[in-house]
Amino acid sequence: MGSQPTEARLGHLFDFKQDARRVFDVLRNGGIAICPSTIGYGLITSNPRKLEQIFLAKGRAPTKRHANVGSYTVHRELHVMPDQRSRDVVDHLVFDLDLPLAVIAPFKENHAMWDHLDETTMEATSVDGTIAVLINAGPFQDELTKLSLAADLPILGSSANLSQTGTKFRVEDIQPELVDVADIVIDYGLLKYYKYQRSSTMIDFSKPTPEIVRMGSCYDIIRDALWRRFQIETPEDPGLEKNPFGHLKTPAPLESLQRLIDGPAKSRSQAMDVA
Image (tube, rainbow, N blue to C red; front, top):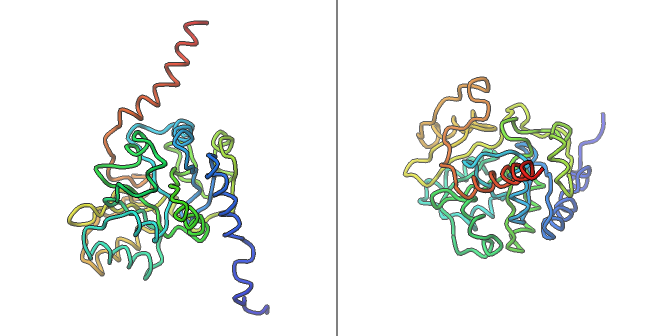
């Protein structure tokens, strides 16, 4: 039998810090990256115009919003949690149970991070004064967000898949047209929570009682913990066949996103008329 791994050998196959630095350099220069997290591969950028490119390439609907790639530290830096119980819920899920989570909560609108975003992008990143921040989604993301927080550079995006085709947990499953828009791809193979076949579980903490917005990876454990520790009732998961993407709530469509979607279609129509 081989010897047990020593501390010096742990993590020797993936250089999370170096990979994060490579991606951050691309993002800081306005590029697009495909990156791993425990809940699937993401398509991310820090450039508002490239964010629009991602949105169009994926074929997203005007009801969709951009998510913030974050960490627990980023969550505490940006979010304004309404009460101690909300903070306790997040801490229990993230620290005691080590689960990935997308936290939706009111945010500090005057934070320096938002100086990089225009008004239209901010509108498409928030819903009713809240933003979603994905936290505890693996060591690579934690290293990447250390760099982004130090530079006050937001990282935004969504899962690396065409809309309505489901989260991808292997790079080879990502549609080629999305791989083509990326300036860098970090391939960590099959990702941790692939058996759930969904992205992150999203919880809205802006209400008096936390509400599930999306049932995602680890929802079964999260649901049990919310009731067992906090007596918070949440819906039962009907399963992938009845609700493949886990969404329970959908924001209202944004006119700005609809105009973005209509723009290329109108251009194609005008080109055909000219021809």
